[in-house]
Amino acid sequence: MKHLLLVVGLGLSLTSFATPSYKVTVNGMVCSFCAQGIEKKMKALPETKGVYVELKNHLVVVEAKDGLTISQDTIKKIIKDAGYEVKNIEVSDHPIEHIKSGMDK
Amino acid sequence: MFIFNYRLWVIPLILLSSHLALAAPMGFEGSVMTMFDFNQNWREVGFNYAITSRDALGLNHLEFRSDDHKDKRVVNTVNYTRLLSRWNLTDAQSNLWLFMGLGQIRQGHIADGVEANTNSFITSPGFQFDYETRRIYFATTHKFYRATNLNHDTTSIRAGFSFYEADYDQTQPWFILETKYTNQISDKIEVIPMLRLINKNIFVEGGVNNSGQPRLNLMYTF
Image 1 (spheres, rainbow over the protein chains, first blue to last red):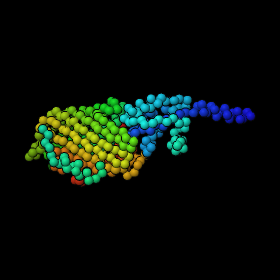
Image 2 (cartoon, rainbow over the protein chains, first blue to last red):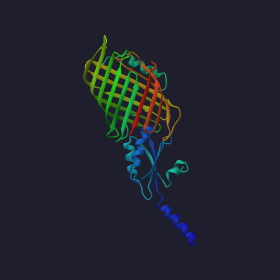
Image 3 (spheres, rainbow over the protein chains, first blue to last red):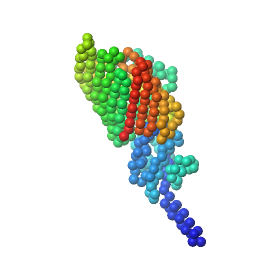
Image 4 (cartoon, rainbow over the protein chains, first blue to last red):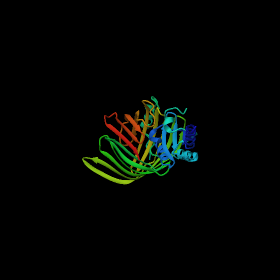
């Protein structure tokens, strides 16, 4: 019983510390030479753990550091200032590696 | 005064027979973009700093000469680049750019083995329109070089295709065909097939023009 409680407790604590990733669909992002500004600006945010850019699916994924969140307005502003258009933002509980592997679909 | 030349029309006609290239002439806000363009008769080096996402200020040094090497131009300018308009589509991006350069030009001419040089103030406005997907690229650029007794116009059209769709962390190879013409300095339309490689902040192009001269174009963003 103690073990069960421990497992449940651990699970709950992991859930409460699940870090969000922001999956941003971006219009106009066709070239890595031009899109690098998005990656650099996102990485410069103090809340950012990692950034992943996928041109094929017009996707920018920003993973927040443990226990932190990133304002969607901030994400939108960075992408707009970089010269692109945000089509959609989806929040995922999964880290970048999970999304890169395609298991988040 | 602008002297219209039929050759300026010949270039687009050549390209209309094929697929309808230069990457963005400035980087993201706060970045420094360095540029280097080198061939036998055209050598250009410069950089610009993106003060906003749409405006960049920079310095440029350009040397070009006639095919017989008797006429030479050395241009040093302060440049302003402005993104006038951008269209972001799902699978494509298109841009309209404005260039403005102000500075000094040295015009040299060799006659009977004697070289005579004059210095004057130069203005060099220009425009560029480009359209790009992950597979095709098109760009047309026109630049004016105006100074006392000097009316050069440079028209460049670039078009090309990518060999495959590369993703963000991969090097993307392109085939680019450029045609370039500068009036009052050369009678030739330069045609340059080039291989272009892009990997994030590194941009390299190389080829050989229709006069057998190699061309190298590099860009790097900090």
